Image 1: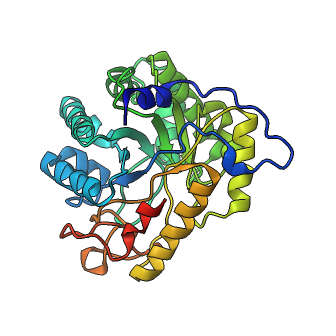
Image 2: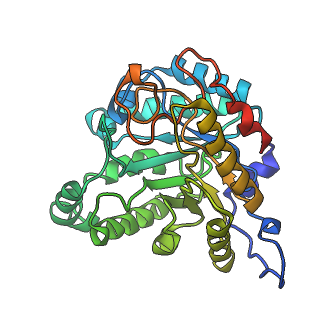
Length: 329
């Protein structure tokens, strides 16, 4: 991606004109329409804590490089970070994150770090929960005002240190915060976290990845990050219309439901990526690499849920059959 395009991605979204009567949604000029990315979980571990605590830079480098080989337009990667790994070893985590940014940059990729997570499966990836927020944010943390507020050092080190880092495309406050939660508490915590990122000088857009509930996070979204699994033109049209009214861009930070059947999975890829491309929305399927992380592997590597497996590249580094269909869009 050239320097002009990179600058455009971190700039505030320009005010868009209202569509003329009969104008096609696909004509909408979304600043994120050309993102062709992936979520990335390295193959070697199953949890956020273990991925970042026992960091293997050679795996990041090889697997992202492999992705670039199979998908030449691959230009952005979403890393899921781990507050728990930071809490155990702040200096080590910061070093690992910096290395991961450098690796992505070396492959021509800009990064969306997901700071927190509220998706939970088997094995447990790690993330927030009501109990954690009630204690560490509301009670002991005095809604973020306590001197020893536990999340502040993490945000200072990660966001504050990289507040003007052009390798970062945007900050994702939390993956799917509507899952498993008391929304009143979670939304207050997210609003505080958004404000803290701004206080720390984040020059990049700050947002939060939701399935489709963009109205509920409009105040804390400099762009809208959506997870439109089984995308349809009608649903995407609603999202685009709201984004245009609020003068914000849209990026699908997850899409493409899984299957153990390669041909069926390819149809999910074609359906979601095709609909998103038609709507003028960039996309980052979940996920590039087969991994021990839940929903990203064949049965020999762990338990299988209804999401089956959502990987594009197998453990042995080969492209999953038919998954070069991604390159059509």
